[in-house]
Image 1 (cartoon, rainbow, N blue to C red):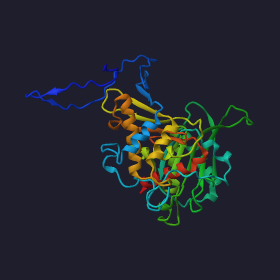
Image 2 (cartoon, helix red, strand yellow):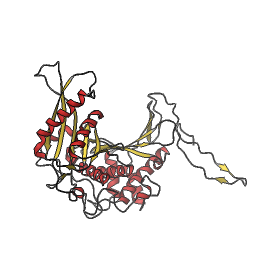
Image 3 (cartoon, rainbow, N blue to C red):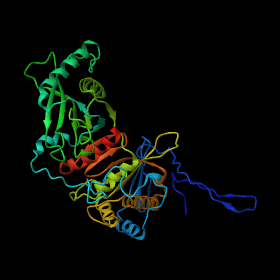
Image 4 (cartoon, rainbow, N blue to C red):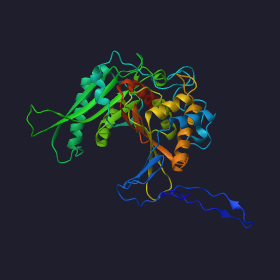
Length: 401
């Protein structure tokens, strides 16, 4: 069999007696593909680009993946989760049955928002949000949002006087707006979400000109009983903060919140293990027939230059595989998540001879949402918005605790 470009060469070593020694296989793709070159193989496709990315589209063979799932009872060892495997998710689906029945957890609920106005949450969709965890706010009151907006506006103006203006060389009149988003909560016990927006109008623009939205950030708590039930009355729990815009605005706004409410902001990363749970949960959700492909992005370690491998699966194939793996509808276990990923790894290796278990999962994209390990999220379905926020809230709470 001829060896294709980008595949590892694994010469066999022999000892003094002439016996063969097992050699370690390492994937060392060549970085000589010119831009636009698309080397392909039968049964699938490979694509290289000038940015060091390697893309692979899995062939439509869901029945093959289903048979792999049916033939296995437990995933093989050595996956991304390593020794952190448990009988249930590391964070998702604790004993209170937040995401399903019992202690096993479960897939994302549809979280139908019958009382919500879709127009009020539509601006949250298809935007890139950076995640932060926030400790409880001391003596915060949702009745004082207008006063908070005035104080934050004065704080930003003072920072401008110190030469810390965000837009260097541009004289902007920044307007601060605080508003409540009561629909973004999992239960009546949760604090209503709070939106902070910064808009601007140039000093040379007419007074009746339209304001430009510069930055948005919002606090929320969806099913955050673990934290809210264990804090004093003077504290308000809004553990998850999402920001869209320049990081310099996050620094200024975060600094004011920390000084005013004695809280602390921290970037919220998503581990590869939690990304596998998101991939399994979001794959199990029902979506439209023309939904986008499920895409998993892996980072290849120990290379002179960064290299990512993109693994795209047709949503119907991914859903069929998950339905085969999941034993009890409405529940999900760590073993099922591992088996789901194990089947995907095996299917990928069959066609491309690459062990994805030796790489690091850095991004998951589905028709529900996309999440990156650096703590970046994009919501794609308003129907499942509350469910995704439920997962992120638990991640934020676990980091605070």
